[in-house]
Image 1 (cartoon, helix red, strand yellow):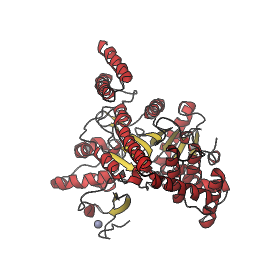
Image 2: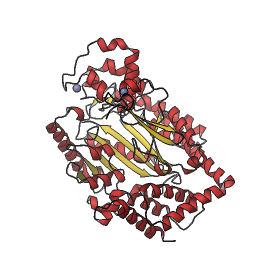
Image 3: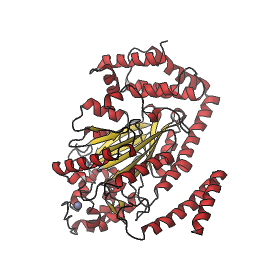
Image 4: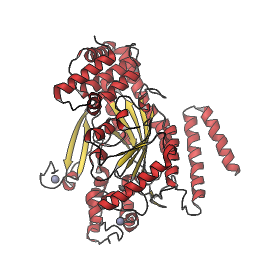
Length: 353
Length: 168
Ligand SMILES: [Zn+2]
Ligand SMILES: [Zn+2]
């Protein structure tokens, strides 16, 4: 298993199914861990940083299948920029991890539902991704992986503050629960602000498609917890499953019903313009594709278009991003050439008008 | 990066404000950031801790004069942590416990102690008991939630778990 094998297909978690998949794209849980007896990364010399990388990498690879099936490790200090960007586009590493310096890496399971960043902000950032709303399943898996690693690695822990992290905002459980939601109707009706306010009241962060500091392009939003101390992991997850997410889903369903019954022309205009654009355009930017796919997905979920699969939409979403496109073409392309290649790929997937 | 407001100090606070669906980014120094009211919904980087620090330091301005010893393991100083928002090693949580506690409390909805998962290795005696009472607490909360959501199948399952735990 190697990185280039990933470039032409979508990961397991982008299957487009799973509970409530008409609104919930994916569920993700991350755990931050540091190895006891080693400085946190901001205080590591180059040699100490190497030591942490060797030690954690060895522990992960030794655990092998217990962490994930057909696990492979990417040494990011050596990896070319395009590979690092590819991993960001697939949500397997964070942007800062791609752009950082010094010894660091990521271990990825074959189906990409499991990844472990080594030497990001903390020594280890474990991640489990699932399609649709599957937080309990994600927690069960990541908890098991954490237990497995703990057999060979001694994690920094103190009885008062729990798992110790470089940034005190992650201390305690070190857990970050994120759900990626597609909220196009709330955007169209302008009620998305209500969601932001409600999220803020519940001490949740709202981010764009690629995490911290990214735009909410194509009406995709990541909602995640900010409080990591003083709560049991299962409680944080139950809150998401039974309170936070149902509430937002209710808003979106309501907005979708309103569009469907009272503003059909507006809805159909958005949907069929998107279809027209994707099937006709000869040059497409990433943003154009994202925003059109968002409307396409909405039209599909509301039964306005029937000849396109969610899977196809997800594939286009992933594979038309810059690094993926260039990997597929096996060369560096920019500007019009890249936009043209993107439009060609989209037409090939959806069929020309 | 320089502060956008005074164009003088280093920007350490990065804000993302969302107004009418449009995102506005602001990069400010700690001093300028502290002047701004009504910070937006989405936040990036270590902004929360920086913001908390600013508020906290202003509220307890006597603290700055008081000397806090550096960490003997990694050499981290309190002032340096205030700059970067990142700690240097596990020992810092002990060395700066008194200074960190109120910050952590504000960052975590008033929480002062960890009650979640505990590593099984090198675990002090007595911890599992604490964990068990927490679990009972959780079960009761789950039960209330399930009933509220009219998920009676789930409620029945949780009730059985509570009965079982009570008998132990
Ligand atoms: Zn300034
Ligand atoms: Zn230290």
